[in-house]
Length: 543
Image 1 (spheres, rainbow, N blue to C red):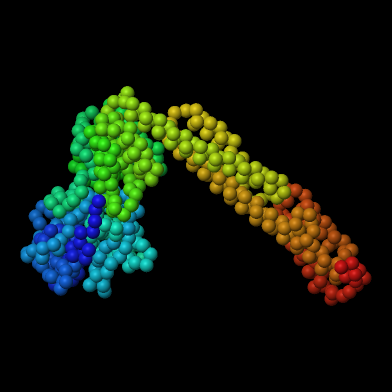
Image 2 (image 1 turned 60 degrees about the horizontal axis):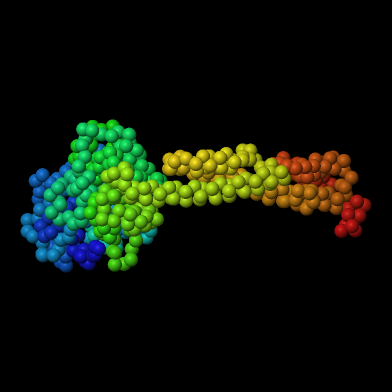
């Protein structure tokens, strides 16, 4: 469990130039060091001043960059970290620690910056929105409604979780005040650039030590590519299972995926692109060997950095559990850890040291069951699609909508579904079929909308039987005005009537014919004064 250890956020700092210009923000670590962005120091001439704004009275300290702990922005904007040392220590208890945590889920956070006219500072609230930025080193921050946007003056500001108060990173950049989009450097990216900051960091590394036991010299390329492809596609939710010799490839991939360890891992830059996972694509890699299900669960909860006492569920993450069959309770790890995680939206990779493990058989049965559930849900969607397409075909017998022809795709999709039911678990093929069904359902919905528009127009024109609607209204005007036997009008009326009553009705053509008849009636009315002629009086008597 984590908790708010600094209720007043006394760690908040403002960075100024020697002349007093506000350059950005920072985070007080311990009692003598301040974390900020390297670009914040550009106008400080090497001697920035730091205001400890989180303390009553706004204590002022002079500072200097710590040698070897400043990483200027690289050409692609990676890096941009700086550690400052104060000339005098802050009062005891002023500083904070940083927390390693999974940061790839939509978590509310807040930051305190010093933009423009608000040089005394202002709070804003944001939501973590996933990996972004150069080399995926950053985490995107989306502005929450009603809060001030991140602007110049927020760089270096600590980004703290709303629920726990943990500092998860610092603001590094913004797209502009009108966009509501900005970015932060998460703690593990900061550590990858400046190891000294580990002195003020809590939370275990997101990768257990066993995953460092891999060889860059002997890479199982097919398995590596399979794992990397699975990690890179967030839509893949059926657990990935690996066993035996495949585990070495997984160890390498997990190491390269770590924000903290990956950039310095052997082979990180020389390997083919499709054998290197996206940075940050694994939130936690845990070694289950010798651990109980409860111990593995505690490791997951600690990594999520949520308030366990508040009954919060573990948020969606990507979790790798290795040596499942060497756990103290292998099948309990599957049923009590992996299964609940997947139900709550976490993506899971399970690795087994032996190909013949009973726990691996249990995991395969579970995985097959998840696959069958997806197939069952897809079967229901195809059945609904079939019903929608049949309804569309029935309506097409009455009205011909403009646009593409009505399609019937459900039968072909049902055949493809049957092939998946009788084959091995293949999530890629399943996802492809799901997308095909989604597209077909969208087309069926668009077709139904066009048919409904056509039917509405048909009712307005003449109802499908030539009675009522605009056609009858125009005819009534003609009869009342004595034009019941006008041959030209009668011919136009018969043409419109035929177009409205001969299925499938083309609403566009019918509307044109009804409109032509109505204009002709109006022309007749404009050419002579309406009077109660014999025909008109007869019509009135009939009415």
